[in-house]
Image 1 (spheres, rainbow, N blue to C red):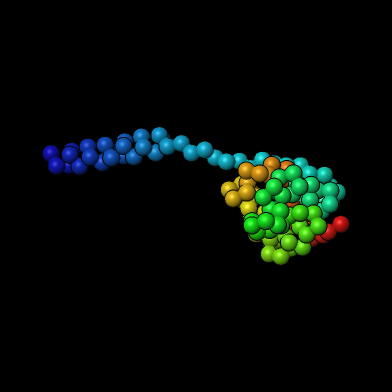
Image 2: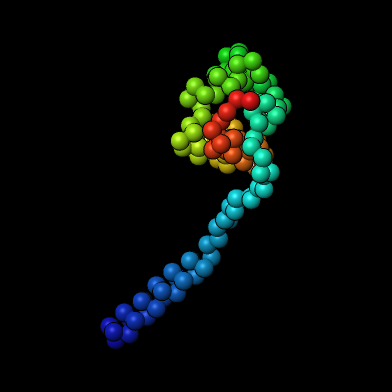
Amino acid sequence: MKMNNRKYCINIGLLLITLFASGCYYDQVVPEVVELPDEPVSYTIGIQPFFDAKCISCHNGGGIPLNLLSDVSYDAILNGYVNTTDPEGSLLYTKLNSGGSMAQYASPTEVATILKWIKEGATND
């Protein structure tokens, strides 16, 4: 009788584990694939207009760090926000990328453009 109780408990336990595991559902976030042109990204044409449209209402030299106004933005972001040896680790990229504190302000295309610009050496043209 004890053997049957043990088998019964094991079977019930396995059934509960199976039911629990099959009832779990996780949303998988699939990053959007962005196709960018083959040309190099221009800071003046590809990066500063993004700052002008989406960032300078707050990042304008007032109380919030990182002044992104056009006359000082390039020097400002090179001071700790851009890392050309580890582009994905750049603070500018991580803040704008999915999950970053500023992600709601940047589209996937804008984020990909900024990353491409950093990978290209983050030049000021």
